Image (cartoon, rainbow, N blue to C red; front, side, top):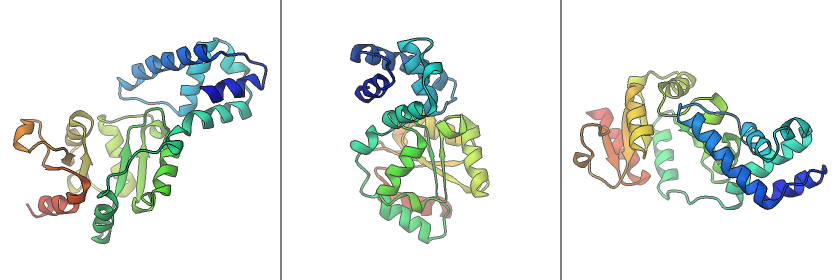
Length: 220
């Protein structure tokens, strides 16, 4: 939001830090209403929501180049302070890929858009391991809606029953993947027995043991 204040001042728009903070929080309520319907919008709409909360007419007054600068400022924090990566991710993905398994990434985005997450994954040496990546802000639908799983499977040319979805969330990943017809592996420290009736097909405590879990599912 400090970058927003600087960028907007360059075109003569005075927006205080406190007003921008309130607008940012207000945009969260707007996004939550969309996300609760398992739908999504491009990150430019996040920025428009913030600007509109500062002043209703502001989005229409912002030139295209300034809007691009605001979107860039909004999207880049994750690149400045990147999240930690599971140490077992790369070896597991490389092993699965070497076995001829097509890998796809399927992710709900929050404040960070898919294009920025691609940059983050590329810097980490992981992006090239995936044959396809689906991000909710780019396709307009979010997990656990079956449509986002179907879009990803269609891009790979894979039927649901031949695919395995891996994730940590019991609703977005386990329920969502199951409803879309996929087998599911949940990343969790809980035992399979402790997860109850809606449990996944298998569990792994980290991605380090993922390839073995996939092999056990395929041989079952």
